Image 1 (cartoon, helix red, strand yellow):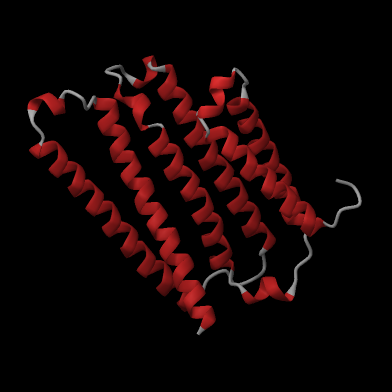
Image 2 (cartoon, rainbow, N blue to C red; image 1 turned 90 degrees about the vertical axis):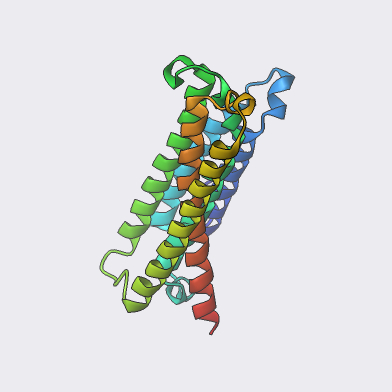
Length: 213
């Protein structure tokens, strides 16, 4: 991408990363006999890494200074948390098999998707912190927003756990046989990711409302 400005280069890499995610999670394309899922994963990983490099090269602007570092991180977190929720809900069916996860190759591949998203998120968040080195990353407003968002995320997780408990407690025996232990474990992990998504979404909403006010 020689001759392209760093900012446009960053946008292009992020668009390619989004395209990789679409191919990564789209199961219907695999019926064509093409390894688009594999290609999507390679495209996503490569795009995220090149986007990390572009973040370093993008010059700081006045628009960037208007938005607090906490809000930038929240937008990144919301994007990755959304991808995690989609990945875990889409993979729920493979955990229905009454097999340990280590003996279920489909479950192993689903876990690899989730792990890849977490690693990419951690790397990009770390690079953003390095970009803002020397600046105040959090103040009293950030602490207040983080506290409120954390409370929302906690209650969202609690509500999901209660829902799973009610579902299991009031299901008849025939239906309980449909829920394997790996599937229950996956549901519990999905509740944690859902709570994380709610926390990031509330954080973004509070920052946006505060900035608009």
